[in-house]
Length: 272
Ligand SMILES: Nc1ncnc2c1ncn2[C@@H]1O[C@H](COP(=O)(O)OP(=O)(O)OP(=O)(O)O)[C@@H](O)[C@H]1O
Ligand SMILES: [Mg+2]
Image (cartoon, rainbow, N blue to C red):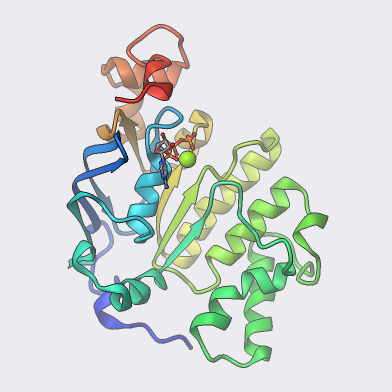
């Protein structure tokens, strides 16, 4: 159906082997240093959950992985290719293999649900309308919202918007699916539904999942591995059990949600 450009395809990587490698990434905005030597490997097929205090640079990291931001130094590899050496054309080819559910869903309000979901397909493929409509309906079905293609985003609840955002993210059958706080602001039942969808999508599409969340319950429910982002670096990464047993005071404080510990307001608000 869709062209898979072999150099940018993850097909040659075996499940469980490194598919994305982020090496010593630095990024500052003006004088504000956000990423300070961040390193992490992502394994093909896994659900990697990234946790960390508000403002520490989690969304910035996802945008680097997507190729939407460019680092000051350091490198990112995707399926063995050094993404940070790509030109615009190569970036565009690679980006087609990625799906992203942005923080707050970020739907186009003036477009219908169907037009939102099919945006990438209309942009990047020459599929006829009948095929595109079929894909839209399939993806809506997958996220549990059949038959709503003609609605406008304004007619949807927050949870529905997130699910439409997810349908859009999976429209092109991505190899890598990125989620930026998919459950923030949703009721506990909707959180469980989105968590289950995340795991389902990972299995059904066979894609690699990187998900940012503040919700520790979600993290422990869905993650194969959890990475703790703090002060511009990944300071610990491990399985749920390893993270639960961590003796790192930052990790312990974050999991417990305690006011006492190394994470203070200074990490969120004061420029360093
Ligand atoms: N395009 C940009 N220009 C300037 N500063 C930016 C830009 N993007 C992010 N920042 C700054 O980088 C820092 C990290 O932002 P980021 O959005 O990655 O935080 P976060 O960890 O995702 O937080 P939250 O959990 O609240 O979403 C913030 O101080 C933010 O103001
Ligand atoms: Mg964010």
